[in-house]
Image (cartoon, rainbow, N blue to C red):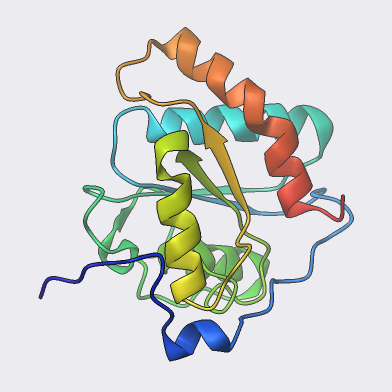
Length: 176
């Protein structure tokens, strides 16, 4: 089925806004979930963001999930998580379980078990991300943007790009 998104279109779902998950005062002890879209350098960017956040906070575990390609739904992504990680359909319990469910499903406030989330995109996709969030009833969904292109960057350039948005990601996840 082909679906065309027109940012001027308003679905009934857009009228009933989804509340953002409450933000925390600190990331200390938090399990961080990363969902890479399968594009080149995606996980490297996210890993660098976590590395920088660890300099500021005592972050707990990190759960990594990488989609096989950007078009695949995240619910079918094969997780590359920490040792002993469950597949997306599993239901681990506790904080780590909630983080895995959040990152192994569509990352949205309504489906992430109330866990604060933010998206990282490249700048040309900002209007698309805003339109998709609006259509899903999530106007104002937290997004941090890096310059495009991204996939062809060297490891040093990826780290430098990640460093430019760490403050934004921290603000989106916390009460700041």
